[in-house]
Image (cartoon, rainbow, N blue to C red):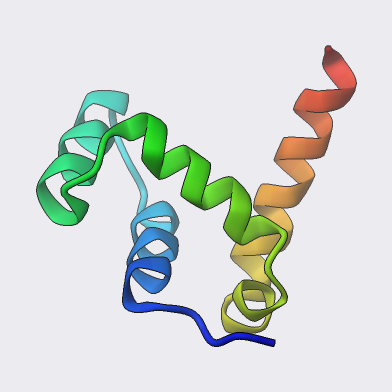
Length: 75
C-alpha cells in the first residue's frame, strides 16, 4: 500500500471541511491546491478507491463512497 502524498492529504482535508456555498469550495480548491475543480474531483474519486486514504480517514472516505454509490445507482 503506497502512502498518501501531501496533495492527497490536502484533498482529503479540503473535502472534510464544511462549505456554505459551492463557490467558496471552488475558490479554495484553486487557491490552496492550485488545480481546477475538475482535476480536484478526479483526484478525490481516485482517492476513494485508495486503501491508504481509507486508512487515513475512514469516516470521510466511507461517507464519500456511499454518496458516490448512491449517485451511480440513481443514473
